[in-house]
Length: 339
Image (cartoon, rainbow, N blue to C red; front, side):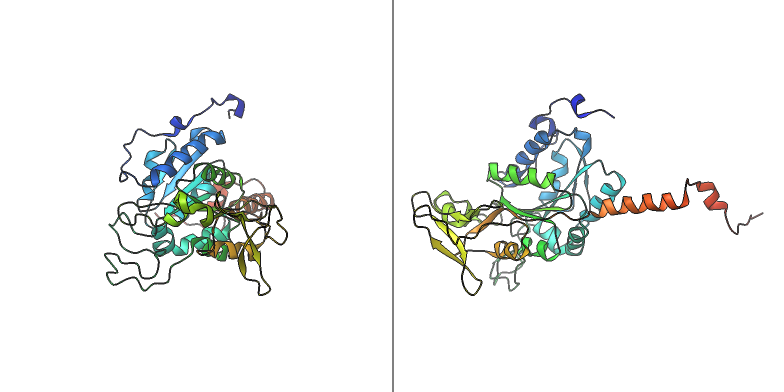
C-alpha cells in the first residue's frame, strides 16, 4: 500500500468528472459541488479512497460529477448502501449526499438509524424546502402555508427541522451551513471529515426554479449580519450588522434565549458556545427569526462507531474459535449425499 508521501498533490480539478453537470442554471448545488471538490483535494487522500453515495433527487446526481468511486442508489435507502460499503471497506472515506425529501420523507427511517448507529460516514443534506426533481411539490421542510403544485391552498404540514431531527436521533456531529457561504462551508466540511462517526451537515441550498429565495433572510448581504450567528466552540455568540450595534445571545431566568445589544466590548452574560452540550445544541438547532440562525458546528461528541464495533466483534469471534476453515464449517455435523 502506498504511503501518504507517495501520493501526488491533488487539486480541485482532479475531482471533477467528465460528465456534463445537468442541474438548472443558478442552482445552489453548483456551489456545494465546487466546495466539496475543493475540500476533497485538501484532505489529501487519493481519489480511490473516496466514495460518494446518493439516493434520488436533484442533489443525488452528485456522484456523476465527482471523479471518485460513487453509487447512485434508490430513494431514501442511501444510508444502507453507505453503511454496507463502510463495513466492507473501512479504508474508504464515504460521503452520502441527500436532500430534504430523500432523507426526511422517503428515507426517514434509514436516516435516523444511521445517525444513532454512528456509522463513520459524512452525510450532507441539501435542504431547499421543496421537491425540485419532481417539479415543485412541498417537502418535509417546507413551511406551513407553502403554496405548491401539491398544496395549492397552502401546506398544512408542520415542517421538520433537520438539525433537531438529527439531535433527536442521537447524532454525534451536527452542523449547518449555506451553499454560498464559501469559507464557512469548507471549514464545516473539513471538520465533518475529521470527525469519527456519522457527521451530519445540513446545507441551505437555493432552488431558483421552484423555491427561489427560500433562504433570502440569511443570504441577503443587507440582512445577513443580523440574521446569522456564526458559532465557534468556546466563543461567545455575538453577531450584528457591521454598521449597527453588536448583539449577543443570553439566557433569561426562564431559560429562554434573548437577543441583547452589547455595550462596548463587554460580553459578560453572553452565551458561550459549547458544542458538547445537547441542551444548548437543541436551542441553536431550532432558532429562527427574529433570532439569528446558527451556522457552524452545533453539536459534536465522540462515541464508539458502528463499523468499529462490528470489526471488534468479528476479531473477538475469530480469536475465540482460532483459525477458521470454511470447508470444516460446511462439512461438520450431519451431512448427506444425494445419489
